Amino acid sequence: MPVDTPNPRAAHEGRAQWALGGILLLAVLLRVPGLFTDLWLDEVWSLEAVEPMTSWLDIFTAFKSDNNHHLNSLWLYVAGPAAPPWHYRLMALVAGMAGVVFAWLLGRRDSPLAAVSAALLVAASLPLTLYSSEARGYATVVASALGAWHFLQRYADAPRWGRAWPIWACAVLGLLSHLSMVYTLVGGGVWLAVRAQSSRLAGVARVLVQVLGVPLLVALALARVVLRGSVLGGGPPYSLRSLLAETLASTVGVVGSGVLAGAVAIVVAGLFLEALYYQARRHDDRWVFYAVTVVAAPAFLLLAARPPFLFVRYFATQVAFVTVLLGATWAVRWRAGGASGFVASCLLVAYLGTSGLAIVRLWSLGRGHYREALTQMCADVEHGPIRVASDHDFRNGMMIRYYTRHGSPGCEIAYATRADVQHERADWFVTHEVGAVTEPSAELADAGGNKYSFVRSYPSHELSGMTWHVYRASPALTGR
Image (cartoon, rainbow, N blue to C red):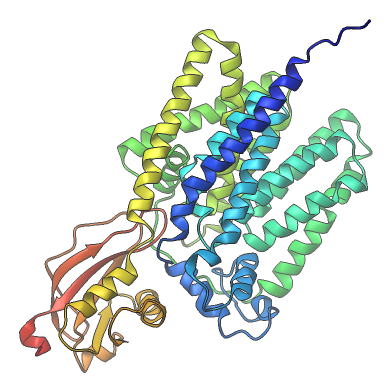
């Protein structure tokens, strides 16, 4: 009688699938605390814009701002204005889990070990954890980009129309989430052209039209109808070199733009280039996709457009692809054993350690403590109402008005604009900082010359949120 021969690959696949379940559980546990942090400016801005809308179509025709991540805005519209904050972030959480699954699928093309490694690194990523617990479009664009890359490779295995539609779905969802999806489509198009040329698929032009025709039409429609007339929201000045270093360092859980972040960024860049070299040396043309999507396409846009403001979150898809590629490459090192396997083990331990500590710090700081600050202002006065002024009428004014309505601070709060304080002083004054925080001054004066003394700071994490420094008018001035 024939004897069944054990299949090591199948056994490894089975263990990898069980590991995926544990990794998904880890990813959920890391992200759930972020669902209950205070909504910050960009989330509140979207909510405030969506609340008065009478039709979901208004999201595409009336909300003309780069803060409008259309898929996220649709979810906010469906959830409604009275939902608790964690409801608004559920879509991001689901997208974060989908991103882990797609990372697993991408790694599985190399080996079961690479599947586990790539999924684990994505699950424990500091920036990806942050974005998949925030009511914005970054988690959905990451999941869409990873999914599009997975389905694109699947299509290249056997090109036909039936395998093109999942790519279209991912592309459309990604474009509706954030325009950074374009980087993935450009990288995918270049890679597919190279693959079609080298393997003599059914013609380069036909393949590109089959895969990218629908996404291109959607992108043109968005540019023509939806994005036309959109207003840029603005942001603080930035140094491109520091921002890129901060982005690379955050990929492995190191936050900031100082010497340490710069050194870590160099190491991450070196590991990424080594991974590209490894693929090229093995005649694995996927290096073309990663090189174009992570480096060439963003570099071209930065040089051509010179954006007036830039944030780490704009490179969320690049962070995801670097993480997936590093995970797959480290799996190769582990399998090699010896010194190479030892290095891979050290890199994994270092990554999980820095990312874990960074995520603990992330949720201890949160995205700001606006509700707590306003509640404390109310508690520190004997009688309401109180007047609050600030250094930025749009940003802080929006947050104060939102949390006055939805945060139950304990008293009536009126916001005093820059023009208002020139006629009548406020009881409190708030200054804000985005990103790195400086030491607040002991005293300051508003536009009307009224003096305030520093009381307390309410911190937020550098990657998302605003730090508030709260000042109070002296008792002699307030008359309380």
